[in-house]
Image 1 (cartoon, rainbow, N blue to C red):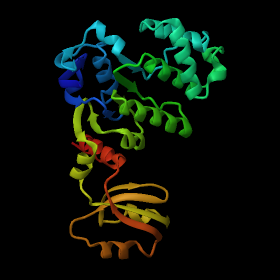
Image 2: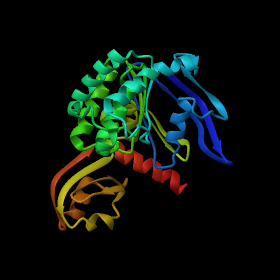
Image 3: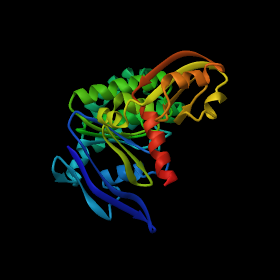
Image 4: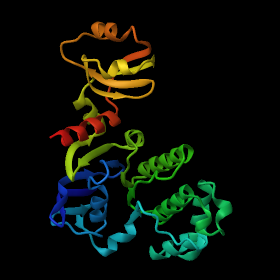
Length: 299
């Protein structure tokens, strides 16, 4: 288990991470979520002992971080840090050597992973010849090639198209099922919702939502309405019967105010739109995220 207790980090008098605590168990995927500048990358760098906290403690299976732990961790940074002019397989084997993997083994594993990502024909090409998305795949391969126990991924879906995002999600689930501990940050709430067992949402370094994802959704209740529609969506923007409105081109999520019935609400909108689907649903993680961060900003 990775355990984070009361973590605090300041930069020039500004608190980037403020009393952050969470635990991630074996075989669990943990979503570290928040808007830009919330403190996610700072937290990840403290997990890796790249940055040291002012206070608080981080333990891996009950032990403090030490250099011998590095070979048990797989880290995918948000920034791309692979050598552009080197051949792809050479880059993979070089980083594998830093984890004490023999060259013959790293070549075999590297080729297998390149094939998994449909990049086997690029093994002898330079990194700079790859698209940004394909370079992201190489960085991911490097982060897991040594079969780490703990996997920490900072924005792993960056630059990936929908098909490759789906492939990466499949691989992350496979790694979870093999007992890995996975922490990942992302701005993609749909991906976080599908993958995460537990989450923490932070804003300005402070926890605003935390817990098992199913329990978090239960806490937010079933007051959320989802409507799929066609027609003039501005009718919702001025409707006084709803709150927490998240409006898109042809669907929305919202909540009814306490003293309005479903029938009254439908009557108030039925003349302006064609309702294709109306249902009470669990709030999506996107809705929880937007509502939670907005509350912080309003306060």
